[in-house]
Structure formats: C-alpha cells, structure tokens
Image 1 (cartoon, each protein chain N blue to C red):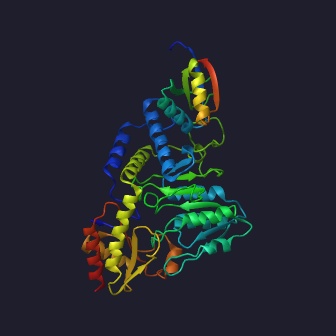
Image 2 (image 1 turned 90 degrees about the horizontal axis):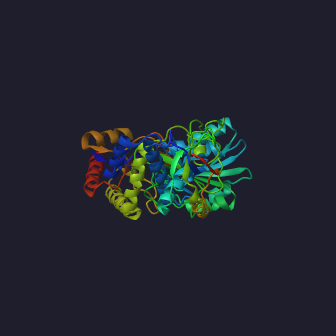
Image 3 (image 1 turned 60 degrees about the vertical axis):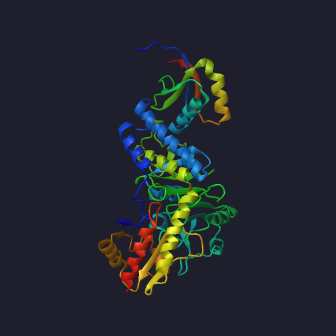
Length: 78
Length: 377
C-alpha cells in the first residue's frame, strides 16, 4: 500500500455537500481531492475532501465564506 | 407527423440534449457510490444540474433541489411528506390527477380534508375563493401553475401571497410551465415547486424534481440506499439525500442539464413568445370555424394550448382522424383532469388538445387549421 502522510480530511453529510466543496476548491484553485472516508473516521461509505494540512486556513476560510455544510474537520494519516 | 402534443411531452429534443444523454451513457458511473472517475463524473453532472435548476427557479440552495422521475413523484413526495392527519388543504378544479390522487388518498387514509376552488365554464378561478376556503386547520394550498387542459395560467404569485399571509405552505405543480413561464420561488412565495423535465424544459423523460424553499420539512416518501450514512437504520436527515433513495437517473439528468443550457442560451422569453405566436395563430384560425368550440380564457396569461371540440363529435374520433388522415398528433379524452372537464361540461365528450412547442412551425399550424376546418364541414 502507499505510504501514509498527515492530511486534512473534511467529511460531509451528503454527496451534494462534497460536490459543492470540490467545485468551489477547483474554482478557487485550492488543493485537494475527494477520497473515500478513512475508516478511522467512520465505517461509512461516503466521500471526504482530502488536502494538505497547510491548506487548512484557506479551506476553512472558503467553507465559512460560502456557508458550506460539513460534518467533520480533522487531521490524520491518510 | 405534425406533433402538436407538446403538453404531454416535447417529442423533439434539442440536439445537445441527445448528445449529453449519449455521452452520459458511455461515461457515467453511479453517483455517490465512490470516488473513482466514473462515479465522480456522475456526481459532478448531477450537482451541476442542481445548481442550474436552483438558479433557473430561484430556489434558495442547490441542495434544496431533489431529483425525482417526474412531477407526479415530486408531488407525492411533497403532498404526502407535508400533510398530517387533521390537516385541511385547498386545491383547485384545474388540477391534474398527479395532484388529485395523492390528495384523495390522504383524505381517505389520513383524515386530511380537502376544499377546491371552483372553475367556471372557461376554466377561470376566483382568487378570492382561496381566502374564503381557509380554515384554522388549513395547512397548505396545492395549485397548478397552468391547466394542462385549457392552458389557463394561474397567477401563482397572487396565490403565494395569500398562502403566506395566512401561514400556509404553497405547493406548485409546474408541469405545464417549467421552461416556458417564468418561475421565481422567492418572488412568488413558492414553498415546494414540483416540475418535470420532459415537457417544456425539453429534457429526457424520467427526469423531474422538487425544489424546496426555506423552512420546509418533509417526511421521506421513500427510503433506501443513499451512498452515505450506511450504518444508520434511518434515511439521512439532510437535503437532498433525505428525499432521494436509490440510484439517480444520471443519464437523464445529464440531458436535463444540457436542456437547461439550451433554454438559457435561447432565452425563456424568446421561447415563450414563439410558442404564444403559434398558439394565437391557431386560435385565430379555428375560433371562427362553425361547429368548433374552443375552451379556456384567451384574454389572460396562458400556455401554448388550444383545446376544442368539433360539434358533438367524440374527441377520440376527431384525434384519430387528425392522426390517420392528416398526420397530426393531438391529445383527446380526459387528460387526467377530471374536475376540469366537469367544470367545462366536457366529461362525456372529452376534448381535443392542440399544444404547441418550440420546434413547431407556422406551416404546421396552418395545416392543423385546415384539418379542423375540413373535419367541421
């Protein structure tokens, strides 16, 4: 398997919210991509936004500015 | 074939709609079922369609756009999800069975009581009746934006103002108007907007939706797989997922998304003016023919529908003659609008509906006028 590195992982209640995050990040040129939610967070099958940890301030600002609804916001080895 | 049954479905679709469906059928996986390219492509197209529809109808948020397979499903979700035992609902004689049957079922099974704003012999309503029918237990008004039989449009903003002045929710059936008449959920005080994709929106059959305003909570009508919150025993609470279960019609929604681009590119005003011109041309041509009775109010806003009867002829026979002898497709019979036919006095004869669309031509209209004239002789 690929070596794990510390990443920022943002989870959402719905796919629509995840897609909104992806679209806004692409529009704003912010890093990251959608991944399956790591099992450390939930055994669910939903998707999460995974990004470098140093992008957290920009992503947080974007989420707040756009009133994006997310479930969780955490850093872990992915 | 001269296709004049656009109120049933727009048979001819813009080429970009067809291209989008074909492309989707060769590239899309299942939305919300993973993060591989196929699934994400579907999720992106579906989310993009939510954004376009929210903008098109002035729905407050993209995630308040719930996809269904047609207006009927959207109306069932709205009506059954909102109303509780003991509630009273006001509707109208103009409604299609997609509104009436869910209401009648709740009347029988959930002790919901119903009142209907009556229509006169031209299919017109008195807006004062909405206020007169309100009771303390009234919960909602369910109203079509335009009759599928007469084409008479309802001033939905006026109905919405009445509803909100009395704390009622307004559910609108936009089956006949989405894509041709302007719809602004905020300005028209619409709480729940039900639409289909395959009529004036010119998208594929099997597409439609429900747009929710702010502060509208519905019980899920169907529950099941959502791609999220798998280990919960219950349907997720968040929109749009709480009202969507099972695989969405990604291929169809891709076509609907392309249809919205097409409509926005041409312009709603341009489409409406063309359809109105064709409808008025036909009306002017048939209204003076002896033996022809035209139904509806042509002095007020309306859709591109002209419904008529020839003498006392069975409407089915007329439509069959139009089809077999002239190659003209129309819709006879009762049009799933029982109360409207009773109001018009056409319950036994039915009526022949000519409905015009963006792709019809003046020549087709003139051919239809000549056909009606010959059948009436």
